[in-house]
Length: 229
Image (cartoon, one colour):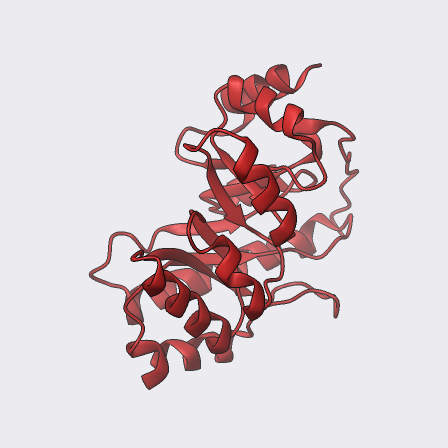
């Protein structure tokens, strides 16, 4: 199936309208992204800043670019003029730099706090306690050019369905707790970004509002054989 067919299938058969689809376009060519764009896709996620900047310069300007990979503070300035959302905020230091660069560009940049939910040391993210501490901090209260829209999490890369469900459930419960404690009056705190090509259907069942899908759209789909133990 073509990229366009894959997008159509996702949007009409498996992804509810209330769930946003981010096409993970890292390592994909400008031509492949353009094909997805021509099929109606507007949200694209990239891991590497330099790659995203180069693609942004060559592609339509109404694309909404999401930074979904680990972001170094010294790279924020390159994407601050155009980035739609930074999903991978994992420290107050990074959030302060995003705020600084957003101010320089006269923007307010949407961000998600990346929460560590996986049983893998290689994953980035804030612990539950660290996220609460960040939101309670005086440093966070001073930031006027960033907007926390919700949370992002990456589940463990495993074929154990129960473990993945449990991790997604933890993130959903934590999201609801933060909403009650810190964002009760803010309707814009409404994003739970969880689920990728291998597990997005489970994520949607557990309350995801945004999924990040690459191989299912662009090829090389990962097929999971779930185990319930």
